Length: 370
Figure 1 (cartoon, rainbow, N blue to C red):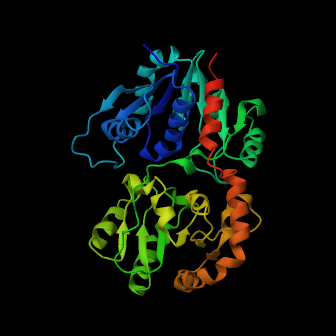
Figure 2 (cartoon, helix red, strand yellow):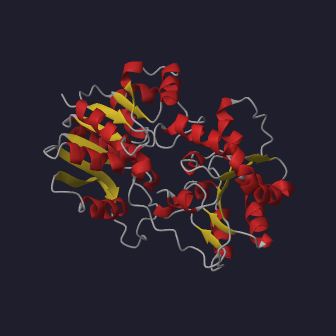
Figure 3 (cartoon, rainbow, N blue to C red):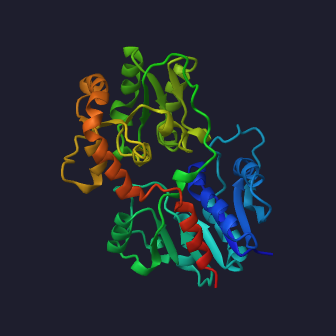
């Protein structure tokens, strides 16, 4: 038996904080609605079961997707190995075909409405925010409704061919995720905290050319506490990330994390004083509360005037690794002059941070029911 609405928790754990606030808001707005949460692994199940238990009594069911992986030895919250997603979706399709509304945060699930004559209405929730998002994939046009954080993203999607009437501006639901991992006591010494967050795609990342040396220079300076938290998928393409993390294990001034739930739930962007990165959309989340930023241009990009690099206007851009430490040292003093522009940048990409984004998203999801 299928519920009225299904939420698909089939991908990496980084998608969970984008979807779960919408689950809670939908359940609160319509407690009579039957909601199925389809889960791909026991890691997802353990995380989400404890949060669902905190909600008022409602009709939420945790359901194991075909190919569900039991991972008893996997550390709580760590990004798990996933079942083959297309196979899982193919086997899940009959159940979803009986479900009026399906909500997903990754594009793979949109192959179902793109290829099959389903009456099910798919609602797509983008994960992340920023000017480098890919928008012209045909699967995006298969969603019955796409929820976007701000007007700027609606305009960009419409320009990429998504029908305007299928796009709803609701705000950034992840900003209302309430289950962050406490990060207040990562370090014993009260130094400024730098978050280094390199991207996982080589053509956009500082990692392959500068990453390890960046980490080592910050540590050797003795001036900072460092959170080294690259994108979860970086280690798949650069296994030396794990080697470096093991090398630094036990240091009181370094916290390495590329796989736990804290790396994706907003804990580290909330805890840091200075953001150091390249093109990750996590900088937009960091700037929900404007603070100092430094960006690494390891590729020699001609970025001025390129809207894909709008984020780099929010701090100093380092084009020579020798300038890294001076830039970090200057960043706090430069911050007051950038604060207003940073706040405008975050609002342009995330919409109003008024605590009602999930509520507005839930209204769109409920409106999708026939």
